[in-house]
Amino acid sequence: MRQSWPSRLWIIRHGQSAGNVARDEADQAALDRIAISGRDVDVPLSELGRRQARALGHWFSQGTAAQRPEIILSSPYLRALETARLFRDAGGAEANEAICMDERLREKEFGVLDGLTSHGIRNIFPDQAGFRSTLGKFYHRPPGGESWCDVILRLRSLLDTISLHYSGRRVMIFAHQVVVLCLRYIVENMDEARILGIDREADVANCSVTEYHFDPSAGRGGNLVLARYNATAPMEAEHAPVTRAPDPIVAARG
Image 1 (cartoon, rainbow, N blue to C red):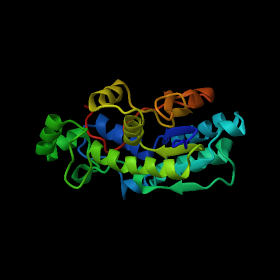
Image 2 (image 1 turned 90 degrees about the horizontal axis):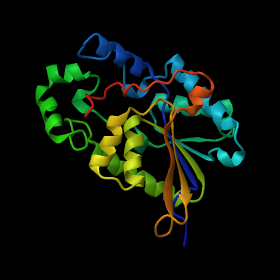
Image 3 (image 1 turned 60 degrees about the vertical axis):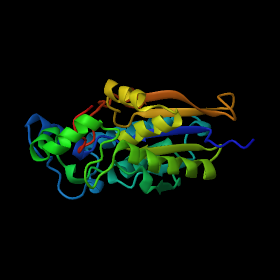
Image 4 (image 1 turned 30 degrees about the horizontal axis):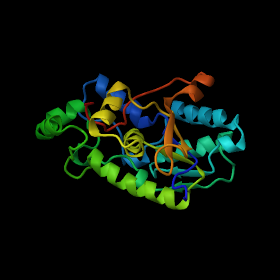
């Protein structure tokens, strides 16, 4: 039977971004809007985020070639692409390894809530705050935006592509907090309650490692098995501060 999964799959959240920093500042000042100019897609890493990405690359560079990715996929958002490039350039992958952008890995789209703090959502769109409270983040879709279910739908398509083209290979994904969680939901066949419980426990740390190994004895035909989740050892190894801020336009946790 043909193996349908990669031999290893790593899912990495991008390093701390300028948007993460701006969101913290807006929350502390109880502002309605986050001070980000331009598009969210163009928000770069902070200096700390760049340090985190290099630490991740250095950590992987200490392993053998078989312990490093041979396929790199990234969200097209600048903060994810920068993380992938800095990781590769720090020795985390071969120097000439291509970084393949895939739009299905993009950040969750927030529609009319884009750029608002939790305080701002309650002030400017109290009806949406109410809908979200009733429906929960898994099903609530703000006007012009996405629910977690919408993100999951595009990620199912992504995993089909990975299965088709990268079966048996070592694949690393650079993306966003919601994408990390939604991929766990799919790969581990979770339900809403379980993945939201994991989400409530802690934010996904910037540049943290979530890793799966293919186990041929897991289920019929084999499956990916979780080896580590939200691991911050690469940053700790270089004494780089670990940050766990939500993405800049994430509404109140729930």
